[in-house]
Length: 185
Image (spheres, rainbow, N blue to C red):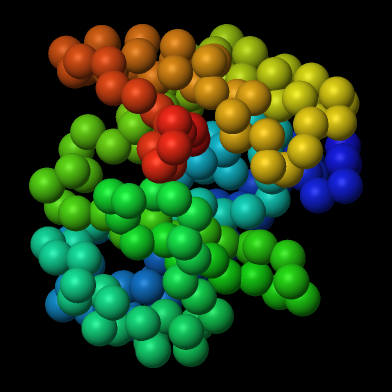
């Protein structure tokens, strides 16, 4: 399904291979800095519809160490992106003006409680919730929601599912919207 700039497609098993390749490249470029890196987001959840963009999250001890390695990231096609998220570095990679990868670099200290990782794991093990999320995405796109409003339109359900997943882990609820100015996933 497509609106002017939001494309949702059926799950593609090739996403796992694309993510694994990107993770290997990141380990090479950020050797000695990376503590962990994982495939997150909807493309990491089997059978979930998604925007065809590989989301990755990497953990490092100190974000400034990654800033010092941005040339290596640029050689892989990643460019720094400022989108209002203040607790991480974000890099976007694309082809012909179309995003293919988004890399979120966060601190090692925040890694265990990152909502994106927690929600991904929940959706992988709760197919009924993944189906609800997929249905919502389809409805948002079918309604012609703009790219600017797409993430915000998902926020209530993302918050509900993340709260459920966090509670199962004994964690308190925290807002899923992470951008300055009242912020989502």
